[in-house]
Structures are given as C-alpha cells and as structure tokens.
Image 1 (cartoon, rainbow, N blue to C red):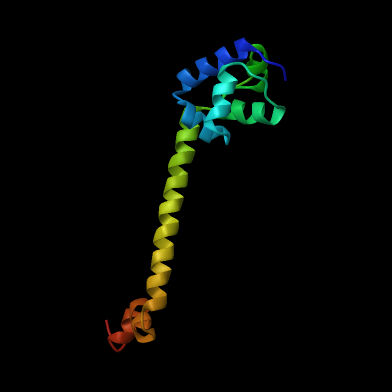
Image 2: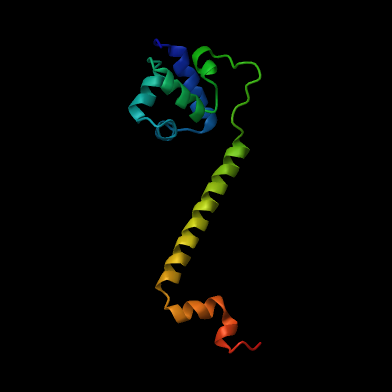
Length: 127
C-alpha cells in the first residue's frame, strides 16, 4: 500500500477519539511505537498491519484506506469491550484463587483434608 498523508490524519484523529497514545496503539496493534509514527506520517503499510490497526482503532480497513465506512459497518462497542475486559479480569482472579486453594489443599495433611471436606467425621458423625 502506498504512502497516504490523509490516511495518517485519519489514524491520528482516531487515536485521539479512542484515547490512544502512540504507546497504547502500538501495544493494541502488536507493533512498536516507531511504526505508529510512520503510520501517522502516512507511510505505506501492509495489509496485515492495516487489519490489526483497524481492530485496535475500532474501525474498518476501508475507512483507514479511503475515509469512508462501508455500509452497515458497526465499530466495536466500547461497552461490550469494557464488559469483556471486566470478565477477563474476574476470570483471572478466580483462576488465581483456585490455584491458591489447590496449592493449599495439596499442602494440608491428609487427616486435615478429610476434616475440612467432611466435618461430621471429626465430630464422630453427630450433629
């Protein structure tokens, strides 16, 4: 894809609108900051780069190339992305708790494990 200064302007505008810094866009697109500066300057880029950049900027490849969104295009909904991020954070926290719990269980003596799992056994079966 050839150099296009107006594409660089669209990228810069989307960065501002989406709240991206050069560093955050580089992370989101899986590239380094020097590439982001090249894109803003309108330098050429490959199709794979254009795709990851469009995803990171919540837009279409067509918009980045032409400045026009394809009919029916719906950018990623910020609310949905925020919900997914919260779910990912919660899953990570639960996985950590599970991992810690399993490690604690492995470290506990066998008699203690039975007592915790079946408290009625430690009380002679009486309630």
